[in-house]
Length: 188
Image 1 (tube, rainbow, N blue to C red):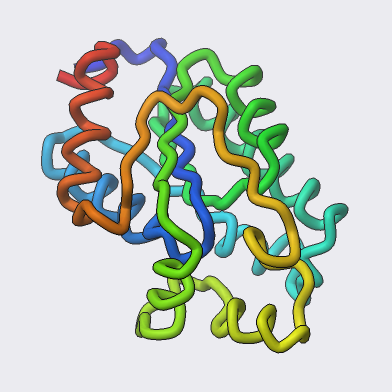
Image 2 (image 1 turned 90 degrees about the horizontal axis):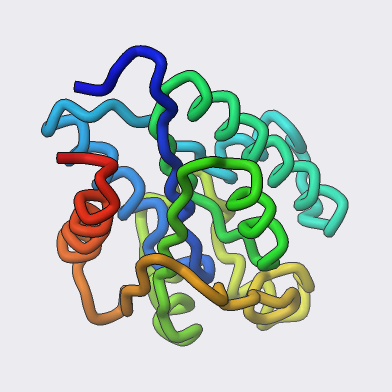
């Protein structure tokens, strides 16, 4: 059991849209809960609904949403809450800023080929508040802001965990993250 005054940790699950971030974040949260470890999922798509209710996904809006995520994660971890960030964070500087702000931070990169992400996005029933048909709109020229197509997605330079999410199940990915958390002494 964690002392009352101890800080929490944060994990940022990043990858292209459709790489499995939301599924992994929610499954990790569930497994941690079953182990008696409290955590909170911060979803960029959920926060965006309130911060930018009619999003254009401009760089300004992205900057705003990621600043809110980082501030919220910082406040939660400073008060002993463990945080799972479910966000593309397409630019490295967003994730690196979070790393600088938080005393205990892990970056999990779900590496997945763009074609696999596109296929998943087309066939998924549950979007976890993510917009639908982003890749179709990008391919049709209706959107220029989709990471990996119209906007850059900068691969993490030093993630603590890298998993090929097109080859591993969400459960296997969660187990790899749990192993890292144990190795770092963040859970038992």
